[in-house]
Length: 146
Image (tube, rainbow, N blue to C red; front, side, top):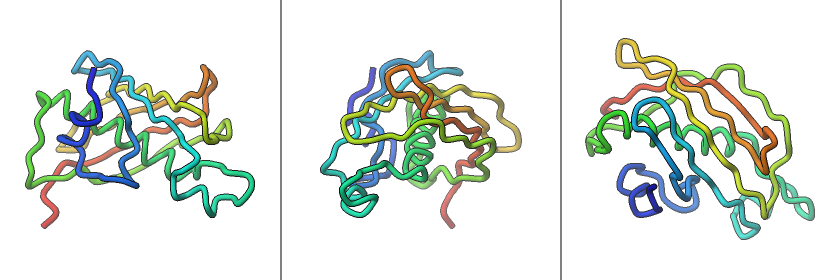
């Protein structure tokens, strides 16, 4: 299990864009489960939507990608090269099945699919109370920003 300090050691994101609160479990090879507690005081809820706060789908996808990055780091021995970042290469088969609102806890179940030529492909299901909220296949590369 990894807490927020472990997550911040690996992910370069910070508030308000750090969207993974805890890693619950990983086998370090092909599976990882993480959570994000959705709270009403997050900045996106002031405008999306006033009076009816709904977590934007793009932020759900970003949170899923951050959880997948945690699995990628676990596959790499739990270390991050400070000169490199993960970059999106593709998002396929994204589906949104349930609205996510403040008070919900998103649970991300990430699965490694394959790695080829420096590209990593993963699948992630995001659930709330056992109901599928979103899912997607994501591909990323780990490289220097220059």
